[in-house]
Length: 127
Image 1 (cartoon, rainbow, N blue to C red):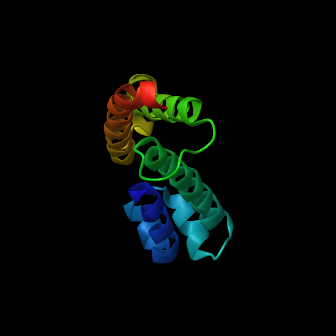
Image 2: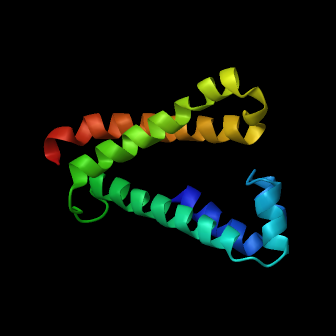
């Protein structure tokens, strides 16, 4: 949910926030020009991350059980773990693309993935 909220804050924060959080110069310039594309993409990412947060809260019994909880949490966990590992082939085969943002976001996804793996193992028999 924190990542979803950060994405919403980036929309409000504008071009400087797009730059600070590593969205790239093209997104920042498009935001400066008042184009709708940057905030649509950022809003979509926030929506996906928010939905994933709802599933995590459901799995933790903070929210009621959502439909397809086990397969959804399994898929979400896999995506976080795969996203965390993407930095390694990127760094090997496209070193210029392995920006500081990519390293940081991979580290964040690794933490999210690890927490999800532990949580999923812990609740597997109850969901």
